[in-house]
Length: 514
Image 1 (tube, rainbow, N blue to C red):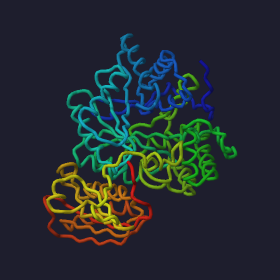
Image 2 (tube, helix red, strand yellow; image 1 turned 180 degrees about the horizontal axis):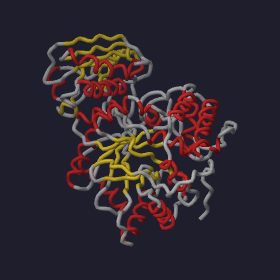
Image 3 (tube, rainbow, N blue to C red; image 1 turned 30 degrees about the vertical axis):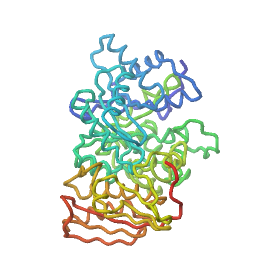
Image 4 (cartoon, rainbow, N blue to C red; image 1 turned 135 degrees about the vertical axis):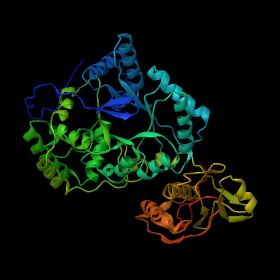
């Protein structure tokens, strides 16, 4: 097995004892290392049909566990990662290990119908690949919030949690609004895994406030920006197109550009280098410590390239020092030149700019299943409409939305899921999130998008709740700025707190196929 030397950094300070990773309780009965070993690069290592040796890779993971890095993060699309972790767990179990590593995995289904059988089958696949009777933390990712079946999936996962197949539920790349919606729906979310680094500080804003208020913990990935926050890149010229080969660096190269470009990165690296030299550590140590010190962060996830290189000794060193006021001031001064990464947590997977390894995801998202389908209006060749399938549309004689020429008009919309489930009944802001997703889905089915919206009207039952509703509206329309009317203190059908209607002017034709 070949190994490359870890980022050399600066000679370690003399300490009386070898540091060990800090530990934290992520949820009741789930103690984890504060440096989680991420296995996403298994998929990169297996590109081109290569398959890693399960036994050798499991031995590598066992070495991580022996050094205190005994929490593994993986997913259904990380190649053989679950099989490798399962092999490692089995070997340690057979050896009589007192404490087994914790296995955190993810389910990332494409949008579509989510019923009990579909969800159970997915969980059973994870259990089989990991070789366990219960998953320590199952994290759920959803590609498009315009398709609301993520609620069905999470409610079913919560039932399986009650059966003992899952110890705890988490989510990945959920923005603040949709995490709030899940909590208002009564989903017991233990964690949200999001990008969080000195280059990407979105999670330090509204997301941290919500997590501290609700008890949800953050698992931070991208902490080292794919390796860009390290000595290797200090003082180096910007990589030429095609020079970067691995997926992780392709992705975080986009983050570097979004944050202000190579000059901003070099300024930040210079500041981190000064702090690192002061403490006789590496730039990666300083970058990791900064994220670990964020109040909602339970752990950082640092990727492992099994069988290729490892940095375990260096990854222990953030636990042997603390950033002081001078260090923080130096870092803040460098960050003043950086631009904020657009949007909220997880937006890089759902809207431009798509800060992913593959870049533009528009084709990927456009090809996903839609919740609504457009249909022609009989006898009116200039009109198309979409329906929600509820009985009230037929009884009352209305459509969810109608397109006439380039105009798309959306009926007053409430937070009604499926055949009558009232979403987040005690949270007007969370209802607004669901409603605007539903409006976006209706407009999308007729060939438009939220960027085409020119008017919204909002009706709020309790005028005291107007601001939380308006703020969510702002999250969706901050850059679009349609004309808007908000009316408060009016009666709404049922117990709904808010109802919204919209109008858009679209230039694209109605989709002819799904």
